[in-house]
Image 1 (cartoon, rainbow, N blue to C red):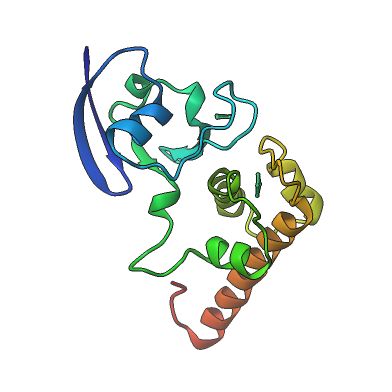
Image 2 (cartoon, protein in one colour):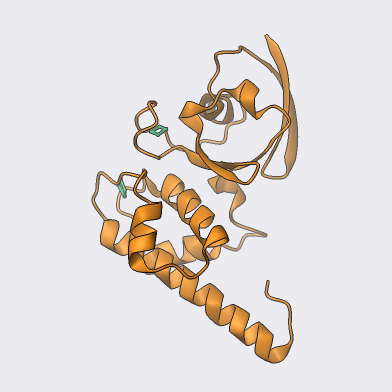
Length: 168
Ligand code: FES
Ligand code: FES
């Protein structure tokens, strides 16, 4: 067994894990954070995407011991004080989910895109989400939702700049 410690969605955890345990299984089975989906377990579908120390990763391709000492953000960490993250709100408003199985991974991949590229073109959104599969094939609305969230963020920043207030 190996000792690991990590900060998940702002909470510190210490555990003993087998070296072969995957990060996605650690989060789901040990911590009860079942928001991160498992679609393929082979790094192809993107359902298990999350943020590991600021890098978007597929958590079925990462061992829990590799996340030792890291900060992890899962889909459960997106909402703040009961308020949805702008991307969650946008997915809801743009009908960007059907069964919802791919949605956590889509949200986390989209969040990573907008953090690095806050004003993407449609093709850039498609490119950024190419590692995330939706079996319900709702891709058009997913792209629309990401673009709407980006536009909302841009509008908020412009408003803040006009009024001299910090953007929250
Ligand atoms: S479950 Fe990780 S990429 Fe499919
Ligand atoms: S909404 Fe069903 S897999 Fe994407």
